[in-house]
Structure formats: C-alpha cells, structure tokens
Amino acid sequence: MNAHSSLYIGIMSGTSLDGIDIALVEITDNQTRLIASLETPFTPSLKQQLSSLITSKQCDLATIGDLSYQLADEYANAVNYLLNENKVSASAVTAIGVHGQTVFHHPESNYPHSLQLVNASVLAVKTGINCVHNFREMDIALGGQGAPLVPLFHQSLRPQLAIELPEESLVFANIGGIANLSICDKDNLLGFDSGPGNTLIDIIVQTRFEKEFDHNGALARKGNVNSAFLEAMLTDPYFQSEIPKSTGREYFNLSWLASFEEYANINAYDILATVTELTAITMTQTLKAKSGLLILCGGGAKNALLVERIKSYLPKWRVASSDDFAISADFMEAMAFAWMAYRTLNGLPSNAPSVTGAQKAAILGQITYAP
Ligand SMILES: Nc1ncnc2c1ncn2[C@@H]1O[C@H](COP(=O)(O)OP(=O)(O)OP(=O)(O)O)[C@@H](O)[C@H]1O
Ligand SMILES: CC(=O)N[C@H]1[C@@H]2OC[C@@H](O2)[C@@H](O)[C@@H]1O[C@H](C)C(=O)O
Picture 1 (cartoon, rainbow, N blue to C red):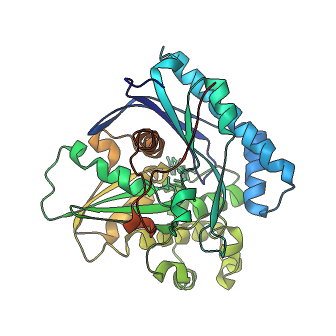
Picture 2: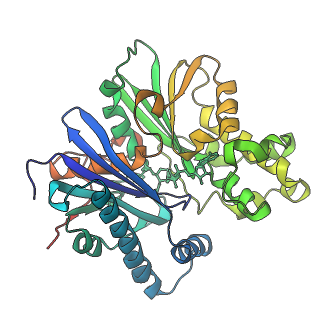
Picture 3: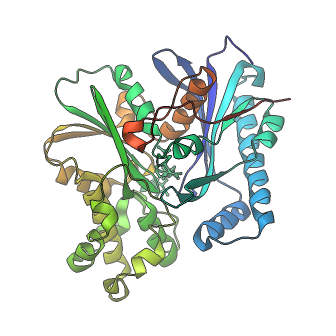
C-alpha cells in the first residue's frame, strides 16, 4: 500500500451501458480533484452480452464468471492506457475503487441483494493496483437499499463549490440511465433514485431510430407530449413511494413502457417527447415547493430538451451543470468511487443511512490486494 499517495482511480460503468468511465483523482482531506479521465466504450461483444443478460435476467452459471472476467479485462486495459498516456506509474496510485457492472438490483426481496460484476483479482493482477469493490453489499446487509451511494460524495463537494449557500437547498441530480437526486441540506442529507434518467429515451431511440441516444433531445423535440400516456405512466407506484428508494433497468425498461395501452398507438417521436417529459417531472416533483441550486451531472445533463423541461418545472431554482463549478459532469460517478476507495482504506463510511435506510453508517466494500 502506498500510504503517502493521494492518487486514486475510480471506475464506473453505469446502467446505460454506454461504456467505461475512469477518473484519476487526487484526494486530500477536503478536496477531490480530477487529474485525468478516460471514457471508452465496451467492445461490442461485451456490450451485447451485458445487455442481453440485463434484459433477459437469465443466464447459465458460466456467464457470470465469463462476464466478470471480461469486465475486469476491459477495465484494466482502460486503466493501463490512462496511466500510460498521463505518464503516471501504477505504484503511484493508492487504490482503484471499482463499481462493477450492475446486472441485477433487488434490495426489496426476502433475501435482499444487488449484483455488480467484476473480477477484482483479475483487475488487481492486470493493473498492479489494489482494488476496492462490492460497495453496495454491506449497506444492503444493514437493511439499506445499497443505492444511491453518491449522495455522501456530493455532500463532501459542498466546500469545494466555492459559493455562498445561505438558506437555499443544494441538490445534485445525476442523469444516467436511472436518475438520482442528492439533497444536500446543511445538516441533513437525503437522496433517492427518482426513476428513469436516460434509460427510456435510449430504449426508444435504439429500437425505433437505430441511434444510440437522443443527441441534445433533437428527436424528442419533433414530437408532442401525449398527456394520456404521460398520466398513465405517472400512476406507477414507484413515483409516489416514500424514500428510501432505488430502482434500475430491471424495472424501467421496454416491458414497462409496453405495459401501458397508450404505448402501442403513439408514434415514436411522441413517445420520446412523452418519456422525456416523464423524466423531467419525476426528477423535479419533490423539489417544486422549495428553491435553491440544482447541479446536474451525468450524460443526460447534455440533453438540452430535458434540461429545458427540468428548468420549466423549477422556476425558483438556479439550474446549472457541475461543469460550471469545475467538477466534471461526465466523471462525477467515477470520481465518487475513487473517493469511496479512499474512505474504505481510511476506515471511513461511505453510505448515508438517511439516504439508503441502512441501520448504520459502515465502511463499504472489500479490498483485493495486488500481488
Ligand atoms: N449530447 C447528449 N444528448 C443527449 N443525451 C446524451 C448526450 N450525451 C450523453 N447522453 C445520454 O447520457 C447517457 C449516458 O449517461 P451516463 O454515462 O451518465 O450514464 P450511466 O453512468 O451509464 O448511468 P447510471 O448513472 O444510471 O449508472 C447516454 O446513454 C445518453 O442517453
Ligand atoms: C444498483 C445501481 O447500480 N444503482 C445505480 C444506478 O445508476 C444511477 C442510480 O441507479 C444509482 O442508484 C446507482 O448509481 C450511483 C452511482 C449511486 O449509487 O449513487
């Protein structure tokens, strides 16, 4: 262990399966600073295998081991490339915090669990760096949702924002496949998954337009919101349920969309406009009554239409991208897992019981030492 280094790496590959985000960060007691970063797609074969596993929720046992190995392999290649490009040696990095690939999230079952795939031993061998992984399990063992975990990291950024925040609320909204909010009031931290982020938008674009995502919301802009479809989707109990709550692509997916009778009778542009509106409404419904600063991050922060619709529901809020505060919107989650590795190695908790519902704060993850 390199006790004096403050360099950490965070690896995130999220629910949208758009690829791997790697952040090399420098962490001191009150700052997490991005030094270098890399975003790289999965190989098409790995993406296809992950997508079909997540969608079908079925596999033979060998698949779990195969995919965990392949993920570690692709993560390691990306880490080694990033270090090489930036002339940083592996020995200068204290640890990698690796989220792994969520393929199933089931915190509400009789035997609650959440499965993130990565073979951390392979990653440690191939990078020569100690790895911290499996961050969600302990929170779930303590009765929590195991997600979202980033709110405590978001709260740690408060001093770094270098702005005065008097009585106003400070909220971070990560718009990934799933959208999650961190409500960072001075003495209180709340957070939850509000529901779909880009996932429903991506599904429609990928199945109806043969594109990967709705660039800047341009396709949705050509459609009209269908109010009957919107109202029907909004009756889903998830949107009204109390926190703690977390969700995933196993819930908000094509089958979910197709379960509404309106879905079959609407053109693809209108479906897109309507799911974009749904995303904006469900992300903002708990904030409307208040005012404050809403900081957006994640890929959906680049969807200009979605951001416009979010702003329209929050006239009393200042809405900005984390990029405006010199905190990368694209690498926020990867930075969070680097920070969590730092917390684990320093014997500090990374979960917030007020967010996940866990009985107590706990040191998260397991450490796999590079041989
Ligand atoms: N220019 C853009 N216009 C519209 N949408 C965009 C743009 N760039 C990225 N996106 C959206 O952002 C998504 C990727 O976001 P991100 O990488 O934050 O998700 P993730 O980390 O996989 O998800 P999660 O946070 O749920 O784990 C893409 O799938 C796409 O829908
Ligand atoms: C189970 C799981 O992987 N959840 C992710 C997902 O992606 C966004 C949202 O749903 C959030 O709850 C979480 O990720 C972030 C990094 C978190 O734990 O805060």
